[in-house]
Each structure stands twice: as C-alpha cells, then as structure tokens.
Amino acid sequence: AQSVTQLDSHVSVSEGTPVLLRCNYSSSYSPSLFWYVQHPNKGLQLLLKYTSAATLVKGINGFEAEFKKSETSFHLTKPSAHMSDAAEYFCVVMSGSARQLTFGSGTQLTVLP
Amino acid sequence: GAGVSQSPSNKVTEKGKDVELRCDPISGHTALYWYRQSLGQGLEFLIYFQGNSAPDKSGLPSDRFSAERTGGSVSTLTIQRTQQEDSAVYLCASSLAQGRTGELFFGEGSRLTVL
Image (tube, rainbow over all chains, first blue to last red; front, top):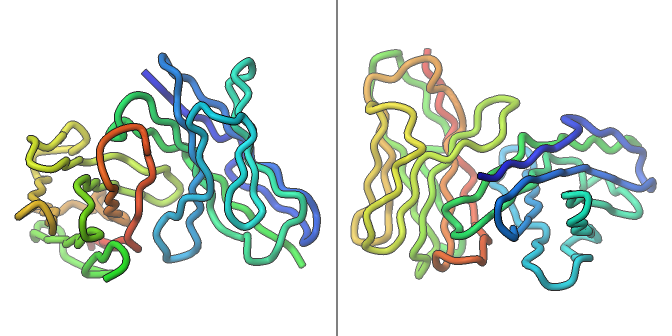
C-alpha cells in the first residue's frame, strides 16, 4: 500500500521569496516520487522525479526536491518565486509499475507581487 | 499532434444522459490512463490501458463508467446515465511504457458538468 500527503492545501509567498511545498509519503517498497504542476485550465506537467539515484533532484523552472528516507519526505523548493509559478502542485508516489501512481490532493501556490 | 489531445474540452449535459469523452494519446505511447479530478480533490485513478493487455479497470466508480481503446491508440471514456456527482474534469494521460519511468503526459482535460 502507498499513500501521499501534501501538508498544505494553499501556500502564499511574495515574488522573489523562497517556496516550500511539503510532501510526505508512505510506501511498502522503495518508491519513485514525482512533482507535477498544473496551471489553470491546463494538463499536468512533470516538474521533476526521484528514481533512487541522487537524493537531491533538480527539475524545470528552478525547482528542486530532496528525498529524505528517514523522514519519508519529498519537499519541493525554489529559492525565488516568480509570478509564473502560481499554479497547483501535485506530489506523486509510485511503487512498482506505473499503474500504481498515487497523487496527493494538491497544493495551490499563490505568488503575490 | 505533439501532445495528448482530449475532446470535448467542455461538456454540459443533463442528468440521465450518456456522454463520451475522447483521448488521442501521443503517437507511440503504449500506456494510456484516465483520471478524474473533482473540485479541491487530487486525481482519482479510473482506468489504465497497456498495449494489448486487459485494461486495469479497478478505479472505475460504478458500472455506468466504461472505456475502450481502439487499435492501441485513441480511447473513449463513456459515462451512462450521468449523475450530478459525475461533474468533474476528466484527464487522460499517456506514457511510453509500463515500468518505473512514471512520467505521464497529460491532456488538458474534458470538463463535464451534469445539470
């Protein structure tokens, strides 16, 4: 069994300040973990993925995530928020085959000018 | 096209009517998924197709929901006798193959409103 919890349904930051979107997971197996972003009225787009290589993963648009097995966390960060980062972000865990993807409930990121 | 294409983008229907939602995956992608996204909710898995294998229908919420994939390409999700709780965005995704890649390419969704 696997699950994923996104700890904040909404996060609001000022432009130019750091972003932290939190994600905790549980998995019976060594998981693969992903962050997807969804802009309004758009499909989801892959930001980054962890698949048991380096624990610090770099993605598109300056986002990073660190896999911490001891904390069962995979938090998404960005040093400096941009207005275009405003979107909904989904943390996803996969154990075994790709059919077993489990999506978190999403975090809505608002970036204030 | 270059991406996953879904149609219609918006559908308004009356309770009790049947609807069909179409997904055209990226050419060459053997895996195809349908998800449902309700307001304020995460993505709910509905059904998964992989090549010529029997589909994984474990996420379909009731027997009013069905899906098929013809020729290993285009898929149609059918909802019979729609109910108001069926109102949601239905997302289709495709990927190259089953396995540990996990990278799905999503369409922009079909927004269904049942009055």
